[in-house]
Length: 167
Length: 159
Image (cartoon, rainbow over all chains, first blue to last red):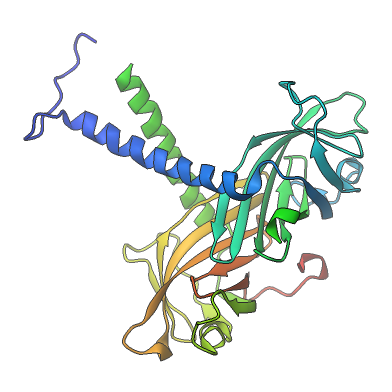
């Protein structure tokens, strides 16, 4: 740390940089807690029925077959039988392995939104390749349904999510 | 250590803010936009009768703005509402985006400058010229569609 300038000091003796850092950190914490709140209330652990439509490649050009193979049939998530595993958290009747890598969104005053990311191994993929999938959806509370868009950077399309917890 | 952590956090915050600016310029696209509300209803039964229809019964058009956002961030719609952007958030990437923005809406016919805080959550394909989602102002909530006025409806784009 030699060669560092001394921090400017405010009237009560607190270094300026420290205050700035605290402010920025608090901002970051507030931001991430609001996302965590949404997760706890609605998004994480319940099981959902996913259906996909309007499949194209991620840049909007027609599907070369990859996307219909991955998303042509939807799926219904179930808790993974091996709950102690570090691997998949969800499975499906079709045989997907799914890890929820990040959840976000808002819920309240009649509406909800979801910004979730998953790692999915598709049942018909011989190479068992992990695909990162982003899903963004919005809905009215009480409808039981949220609709939006998804992308795995190869494919994109529309997604409809049904969850009993939004009834 | 602390300095390093602080720099990391600040960089993270900065990166976040930059991404949000990109969301705004990229999400729907340049040009005049029309905002259409549907399935609007009241959250609480004691709300004034007809208030939601009065507020959101009519679609409105907002004129294209320069790429830089002015400091006040207030725009006026074709129907006389004043809209101020209070908070912007969202995610963009790999051909899709989501928006979670908060606005202050001032309605022309509610007198005395009555205004509400409106939360918008919407999603779309980058380059499609439209975003679909939901909104709430604490009294009324419903669905919302925002699209470029020059755009023709494509069957595949309907939601």
